[in-house]
Image (cartoon, rainbow, N blue to C red):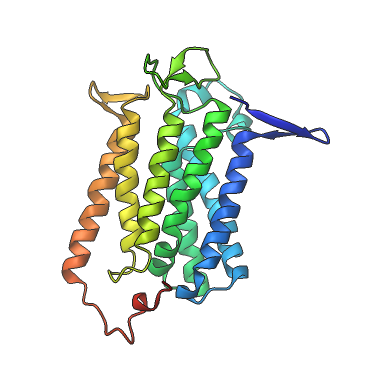
Length: 260
């Protein structure tokens, strides 16, 4: 673990913040390379990424604070605004980023679900990069373990634990490759984004088995409950939409024109 990577002219560069910045830069590059499907320029992609970043950070911090409300009730109010190295909840970030992206699409008159499909693989890729930042930062760690690959991955102790940050990183990389292979799909607009929500929910549910989290039942954590909801909603949308979806002719189908 190395929470503070280096010091640059008196400015501390933290692993989590750096990986978050790298994740957005990689996403901007990847989305720009595939933006022809939505007739978007690189400048538009940069504007989109900026608004998604703002919405994602606000949403992630809001949900994190709500889940840790007992802690923040004992702290000065301004600590709610202090995001030094971590303190963000991905579920909230996904929701906040989605809302801001939807607003941006409406403002620029871009088809929102085609845009969501364009962005979906790079959400998974960005998430995997940020999880590497979590590992270096020593947050989001797993339960104590005696497995051969167990390692010190907590900033609070030196016990050997499940490196759940790495589990999440590898799982999200797998999701990225699956979604990227399906980027030229001929399904309904929004299919890829809905599929991402479902696959992420499944991956996160499994990872949560190895983490110590607040429980709803002895066998189900709060995070796993949210994941189950994501899986049910996403695959319900896919099933219902596929039944009503009528593919257009190849010459007019926007999805069929996606780059190979």
